[in-house]
Picture (cartoon, rainbow, N blue to C red):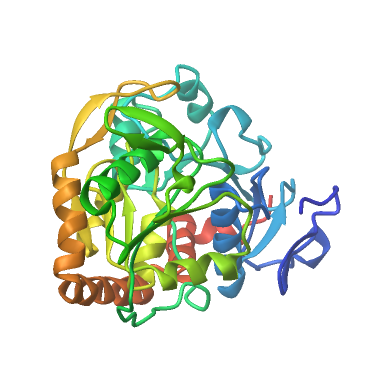
Length: 352
């Protein structure tokens, strides 16, 4: 929910404060994200970090001219802020070449933040700014709780991702059926935003939607965060062979619940893939808007890992549970908020 010019935006039990509640000597910044309050990646991350900042006594006004610091968490062409503010552009990207116009907009900012070491490296290679900082994403530990799973009658694989080839749903579906077609003790859940692009392969031909296969459940409807977490908790292995991520919320959240998670060990997910089951990949030409190169997951290794997830599940669960404890102790939104406050330092306490 985005407010009018009053600066008030509700985010659960907290609210983004208006100008009148910001007092002299109080840490404060202005924030802009058009998708604020939605289930989109930008919106989820923005609300999480805003809550973390407010938990650390840093008050946040929505796209407001008063605070000294303004953060635009959005693609560069939509950066906001005034000339009187310390303007921060906060942007992820998924391939090795940025769009042509980005460098110009980034250079108008006082500082650039991005979400992974991969993105830092890409932005530095294009000399977009002389002050680039790593500000990763985090979790709400009360939502993404650690679950000590047990095996039941069925081993459940899970894939979550938007209706786009980049997320790898077809690779997951093909590998699952190669390994376990006809084995009713194995099941695959595919959750997508809208109809999944994954099809049911019959030999060398692709037919109907993968959800028509008796061993596959396709979920296309919107889910609450509570219901989404419940799906993570019910699964035994998350499979996410992505071509490229700016951060990689889905596999990060999977590991945070203690779920054995197969994810590509290139682009942003390389920052945490080793906490569970890293998937080998090589560089290949990007597609569509993604210029330069991105990751091509190794399908032979994907087959191996999905089979190994079943054959040695207790070992993989133990490693994922350890990874979850690392995330919960080092990378909640409160931890990320402290990174932000350390970066900005006294600037947060100055009035424009």
